[in-house]
Length: 237
Image (cartoon, rainbow, N blue to C red):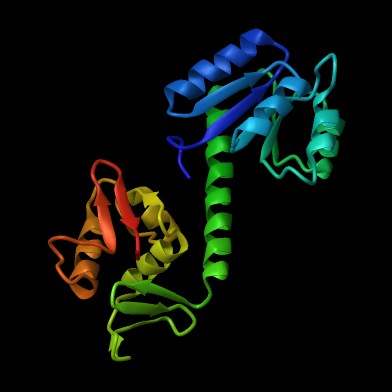
């Protein structure tokens, strides 16, 4: 998941802080909702998919720890708690109750954004692993079948198609993200390619090679499609 798709919910009774976070995160591509307390937060959660909650601990009507207690364990939305600089006990209690992270006030906006990105990366990896497990050991790629248990790509006649290690890793990433558009950074990060340069086009070259092996017509790909301006989509149907 990236910031273009993520929905952030900011829960804080201080309207100036809510508006500041909404403006800052909104300019960076996030969808941001604000809540003044627990009741508004629950209303938003009941009608929206939220990816990360940023919640102050010290609120007058219902404090953040009480709200956290009411949400867990049924609601597993990642939560970053905002705490006063010296509230070590509250931080420990929050983490034990199921908070994912905490950040002291006054909030450093760049650090907050970095922590949001870290949580979103963890959620993406976790979702991919669950999807891969649910898919079982095989994934279709046109007339070919990726056997993940045997780490092989098989043609319709059962013969093995030779793949490089990176080509195999990319196919595994696509199989775990069926129907989801992935940009170059996401593909390379999930494929664990540590040698890539973020400014090069190495992923495009590798996908071009895969298409020559997989697609009936590599010039008009149907299995691994290009989504112009965004990235690539694996759609076996």
